[in-house]
Each structure stands twice: as structure tokens, then as C-alpha cells.
Length: 198
Image 1 (spheres, helix red, strand yellow):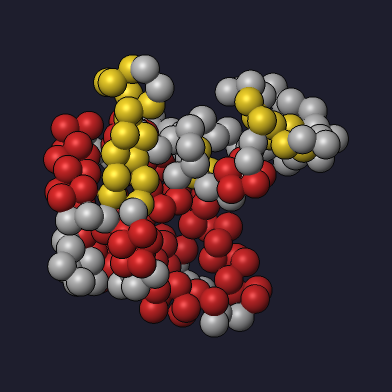
Image 2 (spheres, rainbow, N blue to C red):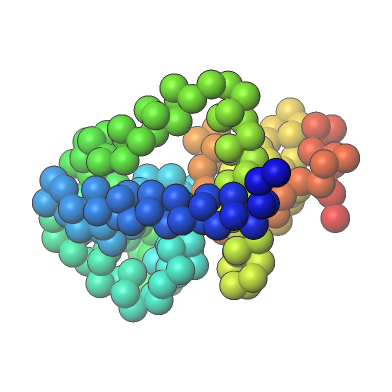
């Protein structure tokens, strides 16, 4: 019989190796891995989470580091930054048309296609395993989870989609994007009746 600890160690080694290869692929199209990380984040963040501090939490780095990376991407014409309302200290960051075009040539796209081509059952088990590992690690490091509105306990799925946490109506474009206030729905209730789960 195989030693479970041996299989787990091998899996961990493979994850580490894959992560390094993914990182290495980020040296392309004039960007470095850290810049690709930030570009991907803002391509996926919803309008409540398009701030430097939210990006820093998601990527596990400091606001200062993120701000410098954002500045570099703004200079390249890939990101745009503007004040949010009357508070000049609060900014919203988004991709420019040039940034959106570059994002379609993400060097990780090939790996994404590999995932698509996995057998359905394998892909399902793999997805669940990665989610569980990510959940455990974010809890261990006391980091926010991040996730999409449709899978969140604050999602109100009524005639008008809304967020119980922000107390605001959701746009269609918000629903599948990353949010820093995400809280996973409990398995026994996923807000299908528009009820907030506490």
C-alpha cells in the first residue's frame, strides 16, 4: 500500500515546481511576473475591490510595493488610476484598452487551456482540492479569501442582484469578479432565495 504521506509530499513538490514554472513564464511581453500579477488582479477585481490595498491583500504583499508596480504599469499605458469620489487618497485602478489587449496574451493562457482539456471528473476533483488548499493557507496566514459575488453569503439573488455587505445593487459585470469582502456560502444555503446567511 502506498504511504499517504509520500503521495502528499510528491504532490507538494509538484505544486511548488508548477508555481516556479508559472512564475518563470511571467518574464514575457515586456513585463516581469510581479507586473503580470497586478495586471491580472485588476482585470478580475470588481469595482469594490479595484484599489491598491485590496490588490496588496490578494497578492500577499505591501501597499507600497503594489503602488510602485501600479505606477510602472500606468507609465506603460496598461493601467489607469483615478480618484474615487472626493477623497483623493482613495483611488480606483483599471486596465486601459492597451492593458486589456495585453491581458488577452497572458503567458499563463497555455496552462489554462491544459486545465480545460483535463477530463471532467479530474478537473472537478482538482478544482476542489485547490480550493481546499487555498482556504487552509489563507486561514493559516490570516488573509482574506477573495471570490465572486455569486458564491458569496452576502449575495442577494432577488429581482435585482445586490450585496448585503456593501448595501448596494450589483451590476452584471460585478457578479463573476473578485471581491475582497467575499465570504463563502454555507453549503446548506447559497442565497438562492435572496436571503443573507450569517
